[in-house]
Length: 343
Image 1 (cartoon, rainbow, N blue to C red):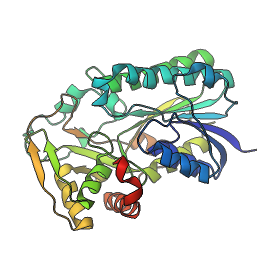
Image 2 (image 1 turned 180 degrees about the vertical axis):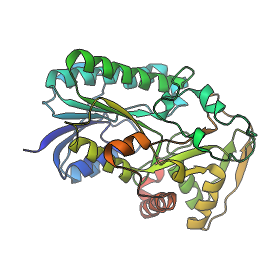
Image 3 (image 1 turned 45 degrees about the horizontal axis):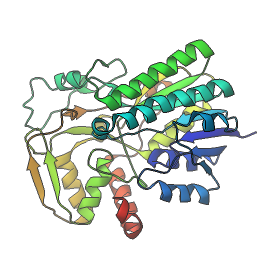
Image 4 (image 1 turned 135 degrees about the horizontal axis):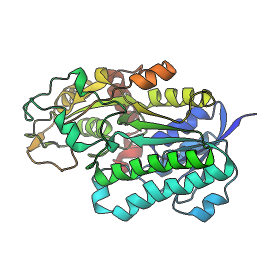
């Protein structure tokens, strides 16, 4: 009998790609209130794959309780843009923390297994700055092993309001597991990119950068001298999907663990080098401004150490940066007219 799986945020970038992949091995349902950019387009994709979406706000506890029983619930739902968490605290806390609480109550009642998609933003901003001590913050960062972040890295404040809600949801998940015997997995993810992502400046920056190049639109390097030297590692959406498929297959023997999931050292890039890569695939040289100041939420570096998840599942990213950027470019090129109003 096929597993019944509910994906919250199922019409988002990660949720929709995951749902379509899981449909091959299970009976998949989505929960999404369709308020985010591009969610209506992704709902159409789900419908085409015969995946039902429950148009319910994750804050609506009463409607969530009335949903059918599921074997696994995967919580992809979140207000993910760090900067927006400063502007709309109620929305961030209600979606990211109260929403997870509502889902965990459903997990308890159904005796479901639970996979929670968390974030690298649970890690201390101050300690991330400490990683580059000795470097000139306005120069290109030379990566070293000690800079890669594993699961034991500090989660002390400040971590942003967004990070706080996700870390609190992680802790809430562990409390539910302890008292109600719930099996869970937590994946702390950095930058994910690929087709069907509607990127913007502070979330989905790979897609945003490629889109601006394709359409010859202006960009800015913001912060740290305004030279584009901030570093992030990037994971292809298909590599994340591959991992979650492995996790589902092994849920009976691997459970109650937290993993850092990302592209790692080989898939780390700064904005300056991303500009070069975008020029290579688009042949468009665009105007890039420079703004020296940045948000206090911005960090100069984040690179995932994924050795724990590699050890448990024999998993590592298969798609390199060139593949990620090319796949994003091809998708954007093929869907320009359809997605223009969402970018």
